Image (cartoon, rainbow, N blue to C red):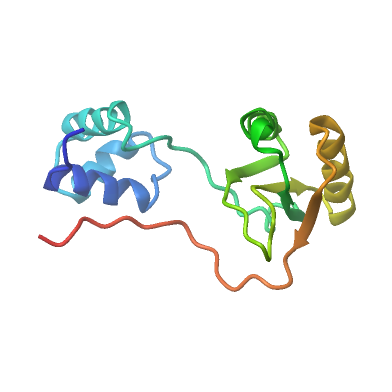
Length: 160
C-alpha cells in the first residue's frame, strides 16, 4: 500500500469534518481545500479502493434519537468458537461494535459487544436472546454509569 500524499490527507481531513447537506457536497469540500470536484471524487474513490477509507456513513447520536438501552456485553467464548460467535454477533442489527480482546485474570472475557435497544429492559432481553442464539452463557452486562467522553476519531497527517 502506498502512503498518503498531502492531497490525500487534505481529502481525509475534509471528509472527516462532515459532509455538507447540499446537492454537490464534494464540490463544496473540494473548494474548501483548493481542489476541483473531479479530483476530490477520484481521490476519495482511490482511498476507498486502497482500504484507507473503509466506509462512509451516517453517525447517529443514539441518546438524542431516543435509544436509551445500551449495554456493553463481555463474553467468555471458547477459543475454538471465537470466529463463529464473533461473526454471529456481528450480524445482529442490535450490535454496533463487536471485538475480540485478550483475556486478563481480572476480566476473563474475550469477546466484547455493544448492544443497543429502545430502553434498558429491552437491551437486557436482547442480551438474553443473544446468549441463547450463541449458546454462550458466561457473560457480563456492563452498563454505563456516566459518559465522560464520546467523540469521533480525528486523523491527522503525520509530522514531516
